[in-house]
Image (cartoon, rainbow, N blue to C red; front, side, top):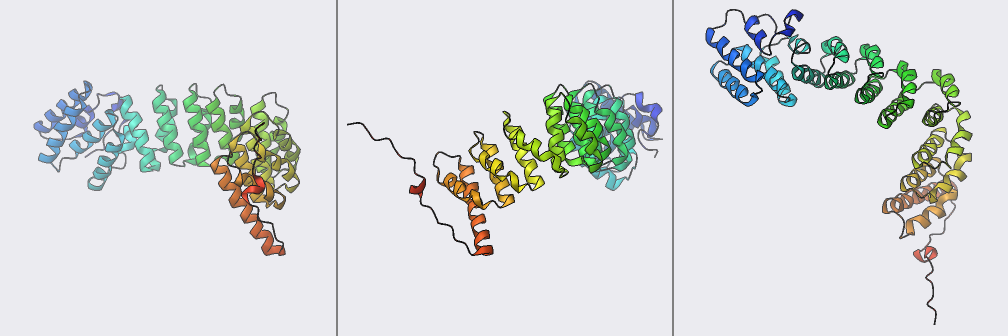
Length: 370
């Protein structure tokens, strides 16, 4: 039997009418059942359509058109996971290479969206080209589904289409495209991602920054250096952090300056950058962040001290571990890192640290006036 939706000419037909045309010389009872399903789906009576199809499948287990109609109806109803299970069962019994690919060109929006999501789950590389075409679809949900599927497929051949999606009018598609480019490892997307750092939407900027940090390469250093002069603050900060990731020593003084930034995320990112650079001369500045007002910055500072094995921070870490007013996670991290550094130093040099008691760090209480 010819494959469902094989011809693009048929994609404008009603939801399940193709099954009637493609079914050859099936019985009139089969055609009538499929017409009923088509009508029920048209009126969004999905439950009744599914019940009818399951009855027909039970009565006619060797009729593939009912199994195909079941997948399409589930997609139309938005039940992608269930459609995936039925599609897997269909492939085992009736291998149909182009069934899902053809569904990506269906007239029904829900079917196209569901087929796109299903293609990503099924890891069917044959779907890459039609999925790339869906990035031009008028429906934003379909464009999102296509972007997500291409990312899950790690389809490097879709890089050009995904880069174009970085300029999509929907911030949802732009952010998804940035993440998809990260997943497929498209280093050539970095210039477009850098442009997204000026996007009006904060989430788009966040996803662009995340992708840049994973995709940036030494060949991008000239662009990053040029961005240091940008009037856009997030762009400058991301450029500095990316330079640190590439272990460019020119980033060190810039990162040290960012440790005093008013934004805690910037301070945490600066510490992360200095850690990546392995800058031991920066330890005094990192040590200062152990008293940062933001818990997450203090945790990052502890991680930096651990990475750089700063034995001069041991006593401050011990003080934090005994401080009852300190965040519980910070206290635990400080105690673990302090002990780790002590054991390392003792093993290498034989030096001994004085083990403090809680009273060494007790906060004196104010005496009551007589």
